[in-house]
Structures are given as C-alpha cells and as structure tokens.
Length: 140
Image (cartoon, rainbow, N blue to C red; front, side):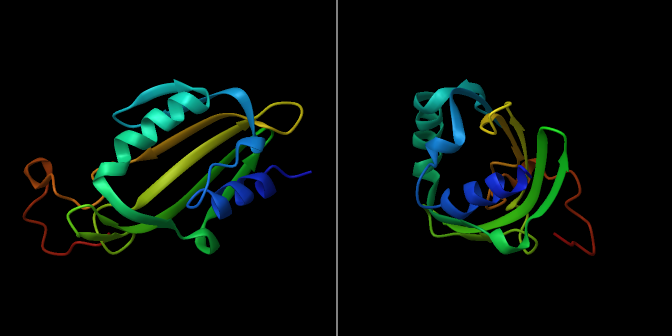
C-alpha cells in the first residue's frame, strides 16, 4: 500500500486537528527555528509558538506534489493565511507559503518522522535579510 494516502490524510486534516493515529507515539519532527522535537507534547509546544503569529492558515491540499521512495514520502506544496497583524500570504504569490515535508514510516505504516522545510517568515516581514532587494522581476 502506498504511504502517499496516509500523507494525503494528514494534510486533509492538519488545518483543523492533529491526526495522532497516523503517528507513532514518540514520532520525531523538525521545524525551522524550533529544531527537533519528539511526540505530541513537543508538537503542541511548537504550535503554541507559531499560533501568536498567525490568525489562520490553509494548506493547498489538491495541489500538493508527492514523491514516494520506499518508506519515505516527500510532499511539496503551498499554504495561504493571515498573520496576527492582518498581513496575508499565499505560496506562489508572496515570499512565504512554500514548503516541503518529508515523512518516514515504520513497518506498520505509521509516521515515525516528519521534517518540515519552509521559511517561517510567512509574510516576508524580515526584508532586511532579503539578499536580492533590487531584483527587477520577482517570481514567488
């Protein structure tokens, strides 16, 4: 059975709830600026840190690209949302909002590792560190 169906289920539900039954109890995750965490309690610590910066966010589930190799699935896609200071972002249209997540599965088909790669500056507010401020044609 393809692990892609499990990853699709994760993304269908994650904007509303955490689908804990898809994961082993002490799953490992990575998120930029947070680092490595293990298990649900650490994931909730990550969520509490992100929550004050965002009013809402939504994954573009129907547009995700999946690559499966053995017990690994890579999912690449975009999100959109509104920050707590009412700045909107939309992956592909603004600097933030693109991501790639790598999922690793155990022999029972549960997620044992999920590493998320993205720029946590969803709204592009950190303009001082844009390395190419004078680009004439910007495509996100």
